[in-house]
Length: 497
Ligand SMILES: Nc1nc2c(ncn2[C@@H]2O[C@H](COP(=O)(O)O)[C@@H](O)[C@H]2O)c(=O)[nH]1
Ligand SMILES: [Zn+2]
Image 1: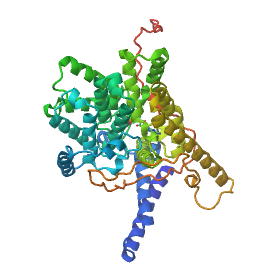
Image 2 (image 1 turned 30 degrees about the vertical axis):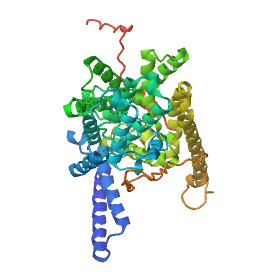
Image 3 (image 1 turned 90 degrees about the vertical axis):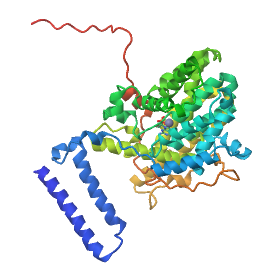
Image 4 (image 1 turned 120 degrees about the horizontal axis):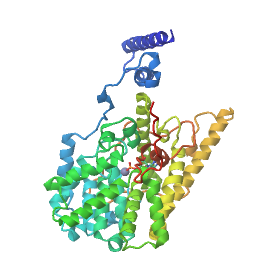
């Protein structure tokens, strides 16, 4: 009875919206946004009923064909790629002004002010500035081909795109310069770190490992649930390097290549957040023992920590650079949790638009995941504290105050004492440290017009709730533990009947 009613109501609702649209279209053009919104709401409602497994009892559910479970990869058009390549090749040998070089060495560098071809040229410059071209006799044409292939193999997803890889590489470059890492850990490790940063999220589909595993995607099946994305990023990197015209390591001896390959695999696989606690604990041990720059295990741990730090270093940047990236990350998170809801999969709590807010998400991520990692690195490389640790502490303070303001507003609203209008904690809380990005000024490259991201999240006004961290959920969902020791538990023998 209820089932029939739901179906009938839905059809009636759709017919009424269509009729409203028809009547208004005769008189008003274009249609008011409210009509389109209503139409989309009804479409979304139907879609939800048709795709949510636990609502299948309403008889609207349609089993998804396997192809729908594959992810929609979004690539740039061939025409756009061609233009970027041509322009990159035109500018890559241009001199970069001292002013730009200084900006590139700061955490306040804002990638959004630069075009794709300029970012490629800046990556190219990093290899030369760190002395890697000379040290490893890297062929320049091959390096350009390699960088362009990498660019082509990032998807146009909101967060895990080419610009994210640039940001991670740029932060690594800044840390290498600040801590003089070429001298301290050697050129090979720095080459491994830079290449790993550039390749660490290649072909990211915008849905994380939790989704891959729960949805049993092609990647999860291929890699048996063991860091499916990181294995994929790494595999794509070495497929690019297999192309002769892109193989920047082709002049290396096989022994040298083997070491570099091992290092890159180690670094990229370390970016799986499911391994965060394990890597941090081992690194802390190495520091407590007395970090030894000649101990290979210690250096490997430092490299894994360095790439992890660079990967999640957005909050070390000034607020005007960091916040748009956070909006993009939440846009990706929400798209994943929406897909999980529609497909009847477990909903990843720290991605759920009904459970988190921007401040609540940052309080738990910075407080429980980011800051402990950054502080551990700061203990060893103390010169990084002002650049990496202090701004993160101030970001945490900022989000804590924002979170409190949000809670107070919610309580006031609930008790009817709230002022009229939506709560806007952002208006009252300012970041304690006035920090701004370095503006792009008098440099060799042309200005890149600001691109407005479609569907950008400006604020997340949902019920505020303490959320579990990504590491905790990832560890629980993803970490594939196969005991290497023989099990002490003996399977009870089934008694013969
Ligand atoms: N809530 C937040 N999560 C963040 C932030 N910065 C990074 N992250 C998470 O970490 C992983 C890093 O791994 P990646 O290799 O996939 O980039 C990323 O996916 C996010 O889930 C942050 O500021 N807040
Ligand atoms: Zn990343």
